[in-house]
Structure formats: C-alpha cells, structure tokens
Image (cartoon, rainbow, N blue to C red; front, side, top):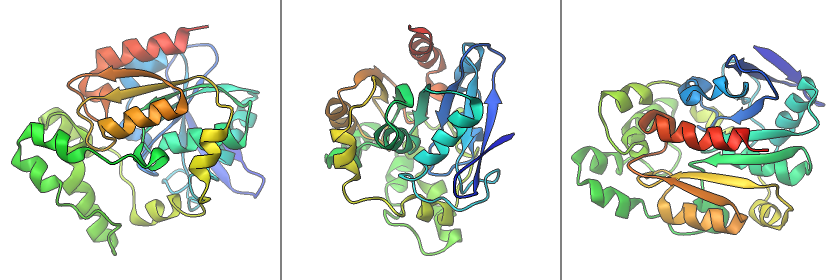
Length: 272
C-alpha cells in the first residue's frame, strides 16, 4: 500500500494490482467508500496494464473521513502527482464514476480518457429510474424483498448494514452461489456514505455537463437494477460517451460476464 499526500495534510491510499508493465490505469471503486476488495482483479485486467486501485477516504486503509465525492477528485490528482503522471486513464465503477467526472471537471487535462462501468446515473440528468420494470422481468420473491429495503439512509449502523444486505440481490442478474459470495466481499459504513454525499455543489451536474470532457466509454449492463437502463442511456447521451451494453448482466460485469467484460476493457486499455 502506498500513500499520496494532499495539500490539506491528509493522505490517500492506493495499491498496485497486476504484473503488467507500462503506464497504469487508475481505478476508482464504488460503494460509496466500499472496500476495494470487491473489485477482485477485474477479470485479469492487471495483466494488460497495471492497475492502481484507489482506497477512498472512509475506507480502512485511508482512515480520514470522506470529504464528499466532489472534493475526492483532489485525491485522484494527488495520486497522479505521487506516481509522476501528468495525465492518466481512469476506470471507475458505480459511485466512483462521480469522482471520475468531478476530476475531469475540476482538473481539466489530467485525465486522458475514462471508462465508466455501470455508473451511478440518474442523478446527472434526473431521468426516472426504471428499477421496477427491470425487476418485473425477474418475477423473483428475493428481488421483491430486496425492493422493500429503505430508500433513505437508515438512522443507525446496524440498520444500514441490514439494508445493505437486503438490497444486495438488486446488483446482479442472477442470485446463485457466485453472486451471493461476491455480495459478501467489501463493506462500507453509514458514516462513510454520509460523508461521501457531503459538500456537493448544487450545480455539480451542470458543471460536469458544461465541461470539456475527454473521451468517455460507458460500460452498462442490461439487467442492472442499481444503475437502471433508462437513466444510464440518458447519462451516456448527455456526456457524449460511447456506449457498450452487456446482456444477462447486473452491476458487476467482471463477476457475471468476465470474458465479455475483459474483452471490452482490454480493447479500451490498449487503444492508442
């Protein structure tokens, strides 16, 4: 584990994954503030280019409280400086895609391109979520139960963890042993989640949509009840991003469709 120092004196942890050589790809986990172990080796992408996995503030390796995803972009730049990189490619998942967009908006020129995997989407355009339509295709009592999890942040840590476990099936196209085992990997906390959504400018979406963004790839999943299909389509179109959709897949494509995920991202990582 390495640490980059920020101007305010705090630090941000990051670790290298994979045995490839060449310029690394910066990886921003979701969660929010979820322990990055849930990413695994991202279907072996570290064998194509080195991966630098960021441990956001609010995780065990970076104990400072999260300053909010908008300001967490400063930590990304601190890592680039620590690695001696003027610019870098970013691969971000879910809530981490917010930080990717904030970094490109607040620190223009530091990100060469970004792959946004199953991004948190509805907040950017205000598009109505279609989770009920996706869930209806499943006709599964487990999904019906997951949909009753509290929509608002619970009042206690115990209630937060209970809700986290209850809604876990919504992240997958199936709920076999494979998905259940993955759902138990990587945790987050109520306090970290609360910090993640603090200090966000009201006009953050407008700033992002007005920014001169680098090339973007959105990797979306057709059965992703967390991001939704309709919100993700609107998100990608608003950002002018290239879209690639993976069928029979939920929020974690490297788990449910690893071969297709690797092929898509390998092409992105090796393009000139």
